[in-house]
Length: 162
Image (cartoon, rainbow, N blue to C red; front, top):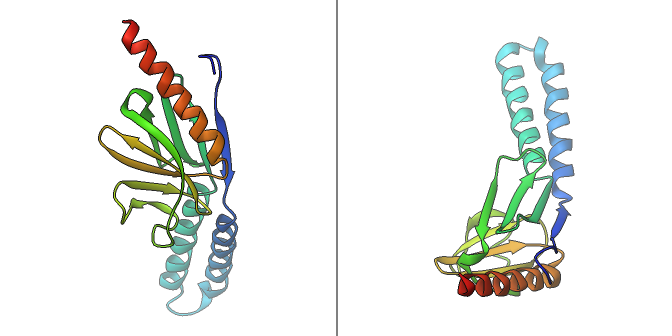
């Protein structure tokens, strides 16, 4: 791969549809309980719960992994509350892997060490870095690992030239 090659992949997670549905359900319940004593308190609870569900759904609708020339960007979205960048020069190697059932979905520390950023499924790419490990959940593990390894080689060669 040359320095002109780019990587961009967006994985969609179906679990967000459940969260959107729950959000709508809480808003509908809030509308109907507004006349039941203590109406304002109950309505407020259901509206706030619906808003939290809506924020979670838009925050975890998809996981985008993209190349930004000198780094790999990982971003949940479309509401970009949670994102992370990893410099290629910090990565030692990338390997295709699978998360365990205990590692699950979301962003959290792994029982095997390091961090997990996963939206859906168990396929992932494990980045062994100079300081720690990062597992990126993806449905394009082979291509992502190959791309990151090519970038590691490219940045390793560039570092030796300077």
